[in-house]
Image (cartoon, rainbow, N blue to C red; front, top):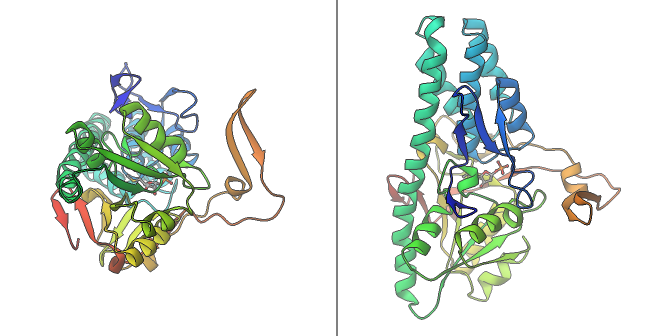
Length: 347
Ligand SMILES: CSC[C@H]1O[C@H](OP(=O)(O)O)[C@H](O)[C@@H]1O
């Protein structure tokens, strides 16, 4: 997407071809900081500490991490240890397992000396495929936004989104944002309500950053405002991303998504979930079985922002805090799934 006026993807091989460049998303929007990952432990740290994040992006980064691991040790033990290390970085987004298993399947049958180059090749394919998948999600979602505009041609289409399921969470386009970008670029007047998305504020910090750079009108709101906006008729549709959709269509996504789905259902607002096939997990029957990542309580008790002395962190409370990072939206609350194969009323 557009970053500082230039077409940009969120990850790319380094100039020497054996590392990867990613944006350190912890510093956005205040600083556009590219970092180069040189080895598998570095990739694991970047995923764990959310330098890079978002289900598809986690998978792509891990795929390259496995390739870097095989540069160092292409033996069976090296492959197994790197796969395990990268897999345990974050438990919820299924794209991580999918990507690691895909690279392992491509290289395990090969002699060790052939594995690293094959892993880099498969990681490149996964990277390019992600961009193509998200573009296709955008094209199918565009039709939904065109239909919403046809119903209200006199005003912008109002979309509410939660967290960041944008191009920063993928290689390009995003999932939930792909239809928004394509609609904006097609000249459809669109406005986005951006949930700030406590506690890490991916919406206020990252989605708002993306939309500003692309020139998409938007308004940041507190996580608690969405229900009122829907009750007031100010939301035409909710579009969110997801970290895992289970066999029965339950949706695991950033904490707070379920509450938006309840409000949408209560107000007759369509609730769409955008996902590529790499986020679908048919091996898990229902959302109740999805591991919910519990992150550091300090993400709740503290907040970071740009102060007089640069990026600063301040404490909000001295009390204990809990920090489940995801929740489950039952399939019954999902209007449709926007996928690369089309808009589906069931996955
Ligand atoms: C396009 S998937 C984005 C998905 O990932 C986010 O989680 P996190 O920022 O913790 O990686 C969030 O759940 C988004 O919906």
